[in-house]
Image (cartoon, rainbow, N blue to C red):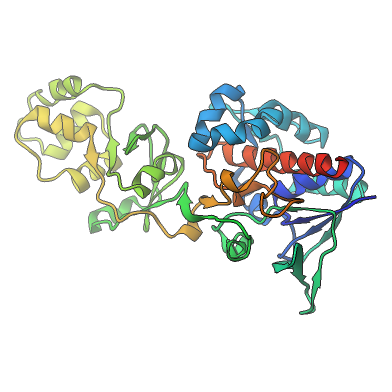
Length: 390
């Protein structure tokens, strides 16, 4: 029986392990942390978004420039396949109003427990507190919990070490120093935006900004964001954070369902002695939070109502760039497609495959991240099976 090693016990690594064990291989998973799938569990605390109920042709563009080389893996393990897989673990799923797919339990822990039981039944051995620290020739070296290290003898290896965010959960990107491939620098993806708020905004901390549009560079979103003491966070912001990262200004449209002419016409209504803020509230039905944001970034206001309307529709956010990369939901960068063959095997190291967030791709939140981690993990595992059969 061929022996294979998986380095990294996140979703991609466990998916690869499952495929290889089902094919009759002897699989050992090495995980640096005391337990596996810590980032997976963290993501599931507020409801585990497994995937997005979209056909694959709709989903692929979400992966931007990586969509072409990721497409074989994503087509082989799409949203329907992920739903069937979860239900095969006795974890029924449902699709929300926005197309996001969740386990009915709304937690990651029941699904993970069922998954680990399946892997145990397939004979997969998991070794926690075993950290990959480099190579001796073509063999990975693992540091164990007792401080000693060992060279792993395996017929093939899947590397699923994660990206470079949330290091405390296991994804620190340290592997890039010894991967033996030309990697792309890590960058924050799906990141919060730093904002230094004026004092009048402090009473609005923790409130959601709803019913707005966001834009940065070519990226647009109608999602919500949260006003936090450190800035702006949430799905609406994460979707456009790449535009900010690439140097674009961040804009908010406070009235995305109205045209500039509509807004201007409403502003022309008699104001009398009403304050400007109250006028905005009355004629535009702006919430106190939206009025506060308008005052935060819109003043001084022009005299012309059309110019005011344009400003409310395209309000430049005074921001200080992305929050630190370790706080980001995910990262771009890592092992590029050019370093891999079509099965995700490294050109420089035959028999060594890569999967998950250590690959150079990025996608928005909403189920796309976990979909690609599971899909590339399975694709790499299938690549190992084919490699060992030749």
